[in-house]
Image 1 (tube, rainbow, N blue to C red):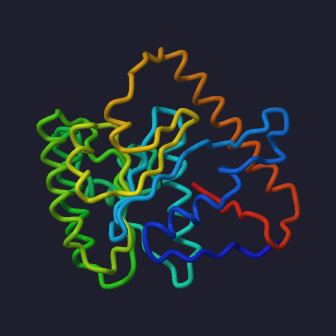
Image 2: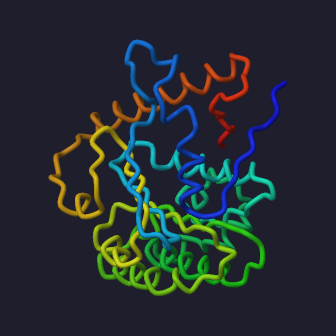
Length: 254
C-alpha cells in the first residue's frame, strides 16, 4: 500500500500550488479521448503579501471540489494545518457534523433566516481565527448564501477590514462566492484567483465584466454530470494504478 502524500503549506500561494499539483488539473491517461484535464482552470497571482484566495467559476465548474482538495491537502501536511470552515455542505442535514454541533455553529433555519446565519457564521469564523494559536486556513464557501445585496455588501466589508488583521497563524483565507457585490469589496486585498472552468478569464475585473449567458436547469445538470464523470475517472484510475515516485498524488476527499 502506498504511503499518503505529504504536502507543504505555509501561505496561500503554496496552498494553490499544492492543490494544483494534483492529477485533476493536468492532462491525464484516464481521459485519453478528450486529451484534456478533469478540472480546467486558470490561476492568477495576486499581491505579494495577500493571504486571500478567491475561487471563482460558474456552477458545476469544480469550485467545491477544489475546496475539498484544499482541506485534504492541509490534513496531509506536516505538521497538520487546521481547516476552519463555513460551508453550505456543513449546514445541510447531510453534514458529517453531529446535529448538536451543527446547531451550535450555524444555528437553525427553523427560527433564523438563511442570510442571518450566513452573516453570523462569517463573523464567528473570523473570531475563531483571531483566537487560534496554531496554524490554520479559513475557508468560506459562499458566505453570502441567502443574503440580499445589502447583507452581502456588509459581509464583504467585514472581510476586507478584518482579513488583514488576522494573526500570522491564519496562513490563508479561501473564499468561494458568486456575489459581485461581496467580491468587489475584496479587490483592495489583491487576492490570488483560482478561476475554475474552460472559460476562465485572466483577472478579477474580468469576472465582474464577463458576459452572462443563460444556463438551463437541464444544461446545468448535464454539466455537473460531465464534471463528475471526469473527476471520477481520474480518481478511479489512480486507485487502480501503483503510484510511482514523482507521480502527482490524489488525496482522498470526502
